[in-house]
Image 1 (cartoon, one colour):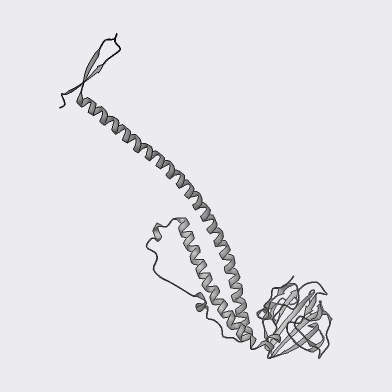
Image 2: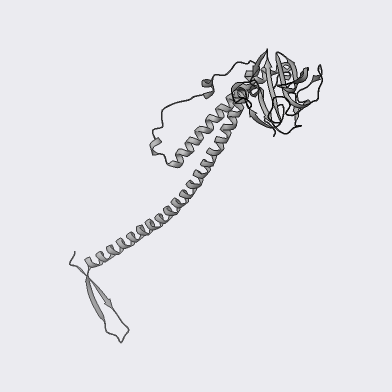
Length: 302
């Protein structure tokens, strides 16, 4: 078979010379086989080349999307931190309300709403972006559960307060004036003697003449002037509550007068034992001086 030859004859026009030549049949088969191999190889190489081109472009696109997603998740984490801070503010206000009205407190451990479970077996294989995405999703889920829990607790507080609305109206709960807290409640250094002594209220500094308002409904129990307090007003709010406003430049109410929360009662000054214009504000309940900051629910306007 390998020795067989294939004879080819070339016949020109009538004036030409007949040409004849022979080639081995095996050589023909070999040439055809080589040609087929080259064609197939070229096909696969071309396919692989274009496939690599497509994969490279796809990889570049995925990397770009991955970078954008990572940036977005990072922004979400910052936003979540801000939401978390606001949630904590709401929690603190709820705690204040419960303290003011002797409502049952919520255990801090109960507020955590803890969950658990085994770590995912694929955790070690996650990319940085996947880790950020999962952590963000976990924080969102936790915050949603906390929000639902806090909403439920606020509902409990609302129901309780509706039953004690009159008591609420007569409970100090707002800032008595505008300004800056210059001295807080508790053991503080006396500005004149330099020694520590009990400061039974909070001092709020501002300009002389700054309006001072009632922090709850009540009756003006006493107005007067003393060497320590200067011009002062004492309000009786019932339910054991009283408030005192001292160092006033002017008193705008009279003894026995009924007042509502937010009514103007005096003007800030620096009378009595004072280093400068400010309001000394006290909250008293059943004869005991309490920290007024615990009875303030609104934000101060300065």
